[in-house]
Length: 482
Image 1 (cartoon, helix red, strand yellow):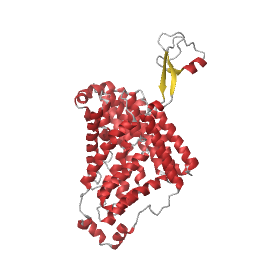
Image 2: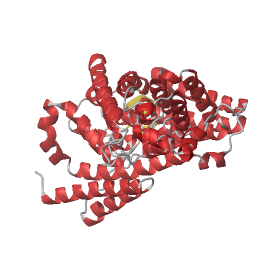
Image 3: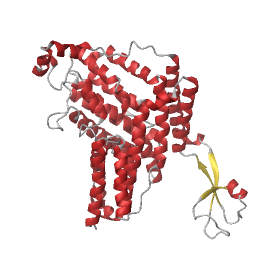
Image 4: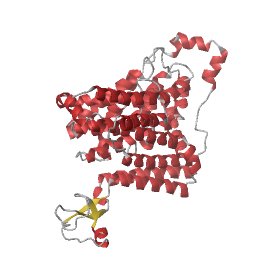
């Protein structure tokens, strides 16, 4: 039964998320801590569990990607993307989002595209294409790629939480659904953007700007490019190491029999001299060395190395190889945008997920009673919840970590949740995300805009089309294959 206290505490949770999103960056996680403190110390709620496994993976993956950026490897990837775009400038509305999408898929964060955005705008202007068309959908694509990256927090968290709740899924199997679904969504958004707005030669506002010589010089004077950069072989080697690390992770996910196993022994109820909690696992070798009587501890078993540990080991090792062999400087990595944005994500997920888990774990019975009818009849409606939460907290990984355990406890099946995974991207709805703001600033033509009424911005249409299409396609694919 819903009580006034429960509603008040929910308002505190939502208020902390809203205030945190207004300040942005680290504030999102830190201000969630205030909400957590009020719930625990003010109302006496039992603290939830912070998502430490997911956080460790993010740290390892971001460290590896940051080291690759410090080595110059990211510059090479951007250069490859620019060559493709300049070779086919008339198709930039379709090629630009593909480039930003796959950059995010490779690196696990959408913050790697800032160098590419001025190039997209420059190519569009030189070709006479309205920059809003490729820029709007390319910004959306840079975030959509997060649910398609093998090292992104959202994907890793989905696999980790799903396995803990009985849905046996691997990273490659998630990507087999999310990648084709999101590509369908992006191409639908690009098609809708292809003739969006007035052509530049027919746009009176743009033509008025060109009438001013200073404005004309500002719009057409810059020639953003990375093609004049000489990329050293060490930077290219860093990319190869990074791709090799991704290949190793995917290999172990596809072929788990290659992973090492460890002998364990479970404490059995009723065993003599039982000193372990029932169900606890301990190495047989450790148990023997401790001198504890083995009689009664009869449940032996082999436990495989978990994929969350595999990802951490491989990513950290790859980062070390780049430092040793590719002239990557750790200080430069720490100062780079990839590492910094990743650490911000860690703090955000830490605070948001802990706050959400504290509230939901204390009121699970009430929430189940309230939602079980709707969820049982229309399980896909959880996609709407994911989307709305994402509008508030600006992090797909945080949405998965905070809301997926609740979805499983409500009885929603794993295949359904896999099908609605693309719906965790909703923070384009209110255009306050760094990639969207940066894209507006990079478009010197002024066609990519926030809009007078806030919600009538350049990212709304491609964002809605992409997320809705991707979610529908992913849902259908998941129902077919699972």
